[in-house]
Amino acid sequence: MEKRVFGVTGVAVPFLGQGTWQMENDDRASAVRALQVGMDLGMTHIDTAELYGRGRVEESIVSEAIAGRRDSVFLVSKVMPSHATYEGTLKACERSLQRLKTDRLDCYLLHWPGAHPLEDTVRAFEKLVQDGKVRSWGVSNFGVEELEETVRIAGPGRMACNQVLYHLEERAIEHTVLPWCERANIAVVGYSPFGNGRFPRADSPRGRVLASIAKAHGASPFQVALRFLVRRPSLFAIPKASKEAHARDNAAAATLELSAEELARIDAAFPLGHDTGDLPVI
Image 1 (cartoon, rainbow, N blue to C red):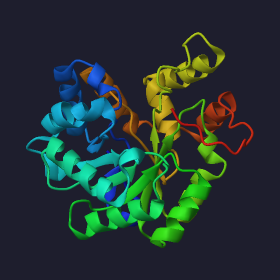
Image 2: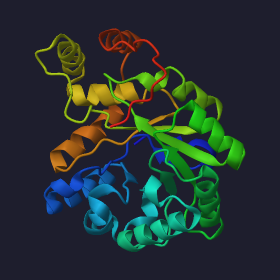
Image 3: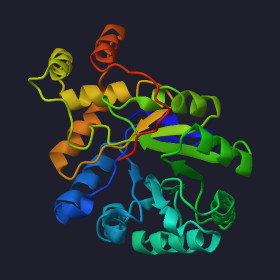
Image 4: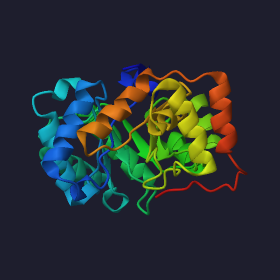
């Protein structure tokens, strides 16, 4: 599995990882197995959050999946904005660590911009780094204005990543967020790369483009979509898979090589669109 430097951390991280959003609704044993198979295939970047299943995903799925292999995993979790005071962030991190049965996170994110002062959240993040509880920190669902404010508070070279919605039919980050993060050496992690159930149908015009390219490579349309979404060195993706077969399909996208002509066909089929200034979230 190809690895890329994760922003300012300097750490090499697989460009395809595994998300766990809504995994509390899946068969637990199947979800654990899927995560483990994904890790076996190189997708050792595991993303979770205290929000997911109100902690159940961390406690009953991710913790079991990574048991005995913590040192090989790049583990990410998130604090909810409602908890993101200084003390609240510290306590939320401790709860996540307990649920995950680990002594540290590789990256800890603010899940989305909230009402509590960002200065307090950043101060807590830096305290957690100082104490060895997290190795790096970042944000999620931040637009350029929020990113600039975070850098103003923390200083340059502190924020590791911005995790954002990114799939073929929602490419808004390419207007300003992605270029800004690239200039600041901040990793961009795309969540819901298959559109959270809105993946193009095989019999649709867009679906036929993906199917045609996939057929030429002996691949799946999902693999083609994933490979397009990580085509730039700053990009990472964290598709969710709660079944082993799906995890294997996701991991196989790492070996797919798309030509410039194929990338152009996908780009034309799923145009970027106009910049509305909005940052879509789920």
